[in-house]
Length: 233
Image 1 (cartoon, rainbow, N blue to C red):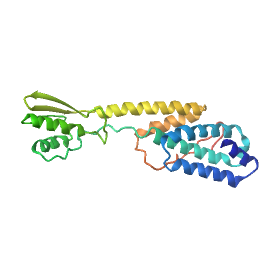
Image 2: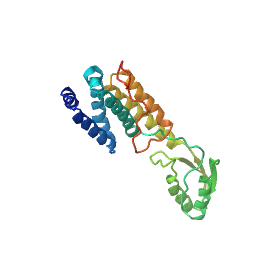
Image 3: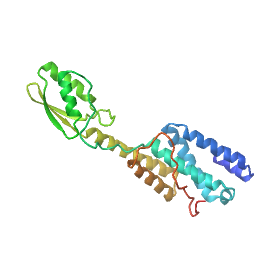
Image 4: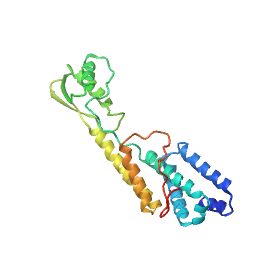
């Protein structure tokens, strides 16, 4: 694909190479899965970037601007789809309510919805009541999180009395997974881009993922990404 673009540039087929870029950008923007961004678009962008940086003819033909904008899009896509937003730490102890309307769950819901209460003692009344509450508690999730790590701790203090404690385990576990994904993404990107400036651009973008949630759309960076030793147009 890079060679095809080069051939179009060499024989001055400006309309054709613009169509190629339009098609590539469209393909990248229509919610391609992360694996396609990772295995095709990032290696392709790396090769295109280095080729454009070394070939002054590309700059003379106006490809420079398209390349720099394309690089910005790929970095945004790679960060948002292959890593995603940094898990948000719970702002308080408020947790989703259970929705069961039995007497004991109503009490439990009151506790779950309280932003300041971390622990409570709840009498289940009977062995069946204990089983019911224990079956309900796994649905307590932080921010839509669901997984093997519970968002609560539970202990039987005495006969049919439960001590229930809200935790941040789910967030901590999700945060650990996110950091692993972020580091792995940077490592894969560095294989495709040998230029330290480009690697820095991705690190900066990944560092911004905790500042806001990444939407489904594409937000192109306000600044294009210059080729080495050349100011952006």
